[in-house]
Length: 314
Image 1 (cartoon, rainbow, N blue to C red):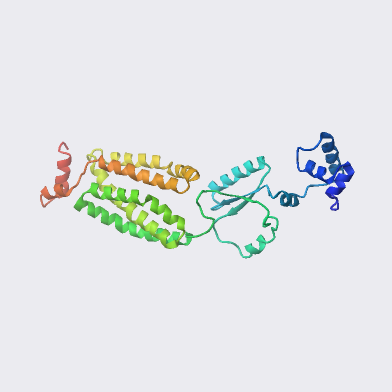
Image 2: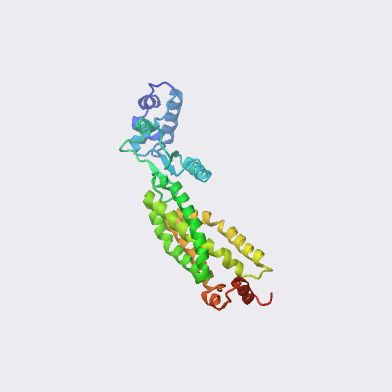
């Protein structure tokens, strides 16, 4: 294409005004069939191509959509980006992909200045985020590794202490308190996470994993096993664990769907609902080791006597 060919040259070759040539080449319907045919023929003959950047500035529309994802290397977000690109292309839009998190390479700001059309004050660029409510900044992630490690250490101690506590106050009581804490902590947990503050992120791990989750697991080992006789204890407890794991496997997908519809409140509500389901389960399950049972047992061999009391037919 000759770089000197302009819209005026096309209009002159077609014998129409510049305005008519512009409307034809931009797809405007307010032109006659004869004019459209002449303009298109002239543009083809002269090798004229529409300047997309100039057209975007004139129409104040870039026909571009910026897609912001957490990490483009994540296959989940790669699928989202692919679907968004196909949908955009169907409407004659292009997609500009960017990462919301991760370290920026040196000089990335300088390279941004090489895109003057996208930075034009009159140009409208649509922006879409992969997950509603997610902030396009890498804030708080520095606290993730420290939070996980510290919470794991705390969880080890909490698991042992909660197990010992169930021997004194009962299995059901400790589990009930942990379920209540989980239900109460659901929405504050997501509010704290949305701040992106490293200290609050670490605090979430400490409370959620180090205290609540560890208190539940510290109680489950003894309580769930004691709900069955020795003949069915292993299979009964294992069946409960495996069934729960199978159902819980869909939780991440459900959380994403809720996040797309309701933002962070969706998965927060799911977390609270699961905690309430656990609470109902606790209220409908009998106690197996209460202080009253412990008080009436002989000083020697309390475990064996308690087992005979729960299962006299054994």
